[in-house]
Amino acid sequence: MNAMRDILNDLESDRFLSDPDPVRRAQNQMRKALPKRFYANVEVAEHDSGYRVLLDGRPVRTPASGEVTLPTQAAADLVALEYNCQGEHIDPMTMPITRLVNTAIDGVASDPQAVAEDILRFASSDLLCYRASTPERLVELEAEAWDPILDWAESELGVRFVLGEGVMHVEQPRATIAAVGAHLRPRREPLRLAALHVMTSLTGSALLALAVEAGAIDVEKAWQAAHVDEDWNISQWGEDAEAAERRSVRRRDMMGAAELLRALSV
Image (cartoon, rainbow, N blue to C red; front, top):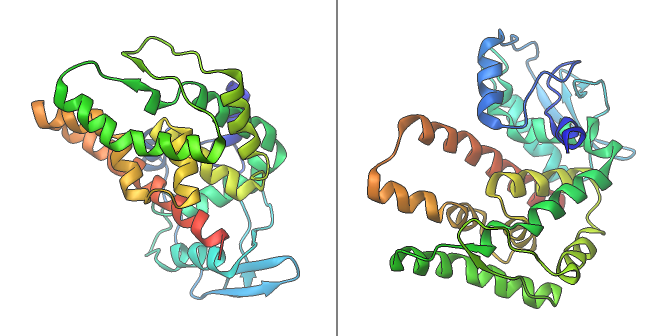
């Protein structure tokens, strides 16, 4: 598991200086002086194996000096837009898609099996399978948000997930996890797998991530579904400013991952 987390760290320098948690990542970045923008023009150019982003005519590379080549122009356009939107300084925390691309190239590509296995670990204890027993309104809200995704999973994968109440571990049938693994098998391209892993880890649900990729649920609705319990608590007790900031950072990464997935399919 620790090796898996190392693979998925954002590689924002020539060392593993980042953190898989987006809030700690932001804090780490704030401690570092942001580099000044060193380029004037950003463009996308077709290359033998895909599309490159050029800064003043020079191709972008990852922190580990990997070649950044995107399979579709739409994906390259997303990275180019993030570079183009930088002001006087380059702030990696405002570039979720670029960071995700770097992670995929410098990390995920070296061990896609480990990334897929981590997604499967989430599936074995998926958020959607752990239900509140009370209060009645929260039970209803969870069912409204989560049951359609479980129905989609049953239809798509041909298996059922076991539900439980509270936080006690629910053992999923081997056939169910095997079906998720089979669904992931053709999705081993590093960029796609990295995006799926980000959405899975941010929501606590592999099923939500896979449903977003399949177009079975809008990413905004998936984000809301992942926060049914949290939003219920906020409605009862109010929202903490620091927690709201953490959620905002995580949401930005979620939306970036979903954007990249869509662009990879264009």
